[in-house]
Length: 171
Length: 444
Image (cartoon, rainbow over all chains, first blue to last red; front, side, top):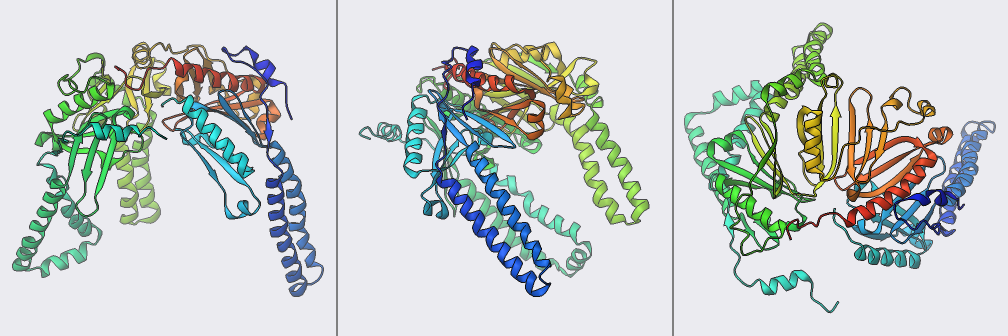
């Protein structure tokens, strides 16, 4: 997924324009999301199919294919979305890039981080996943890396706080 | 951690007793209108029943009621005043308050963003003022209301001196810093500018047209009143209200920072220390453009006020901006989005513009009412690039610059390659820009 765009950005003010080392997300997140998708939409397909067959007739049961089609489409979409997520730790800032249809790329300088949190819900914990959320003084920053390995999430949190302290700047 | 936290160290060193002060004795009366308002509100809400109840009230019942309510209210007012203390330490303003629910707020002075001294009309009559420190997270509970006029002025000077990092021994003796006036808006100029504002006429027209229309449609007095009164209120607020609020607008400069004083009935004196301004916006309403007038707004983190200059000729406004953001010149030539961007935002794409100088990121939007936002590179919290499906199809992208005052400045519809380059360059610029920024304690 690496592109050569950093070379063209080489003429920036005094920056060491090296190609950022992108890291993708571990496959655990994709597995979790796909499992949730299959469980919910699979259940919906079966329930809808059975109910329609019993109360409306066998022909109407064909409508149950609708959630099934959604399942198949969503399967592919989740894969594309998961592949689009990536982050890079550079010398002075963190890069997060995501999105397929609506692309978004965020740059957060380490010195601007006010708070780094690692969160993990019950489902995420079951799959051995954790998210890292960064907060700056601007609420709009919205920098979150979901579905990391808990050890990697903790390493990232510790590294970010350490770098943030070293380069700390106020408002 | 082997070393004790800096706070603990301070506490050990700072053994001398803290001088706690109380607010002005007028304070308990500030809420005296509340019971009256409750009774009045009830009477307006349900007039028939109110009249019925009033006729049933005998004089003795009224007297007994008053004999209970007045002392109870007076006691509550007195106790809440008695239990509110504040103290200024070397690094903090401490406010201790609450009778049943105790609340202690320690406001760090080096985090100070602005100081507001306000005087509502009645407080002016009584000779008292409110003082509020703007720190991120403080709200109405953290204002000191009320203080004596001289006390408030002395306290403001002391707080600013301490926040600036002057020696603590001399901090309460430095007094008011001298002010040099930068700009004063004459009343006539302000009135003309409001007459030339579309919003004034729009709200006035709505207030005059909508109620008769509703009358013909429904023939119901209550419907007409329910819509007419708020519309009239809005019309009044946007014309007379703005005139009264922005009357006698004075911007001054002092070693403590920027001074903004305004108001006809309610006086407000705001002080913004150096290096606290996150964003400056130059607003050009359509009818002002031929005359070359502009309005300047600013964002300070944690502060509610957002106007710097209500109206001024462009050159004057730019000279004020040059004082507020040192070393910044307002860029005059902005680059427009590429022509193919009309596909994404028809017509209005022409309003967008961008200029990046070595001190600010400047983005313009709006076609009729043009708004040019300036963000110093040192104030950028994060940079984002977004691209929706339409934009990708036309090869353009948006760049968002987030500042600490929870305001995002967006340069829309830039060429995709340019935007990618801009994203990297802006991140670098904001990092290096911060190194040259002034310290939080601006005189230390």
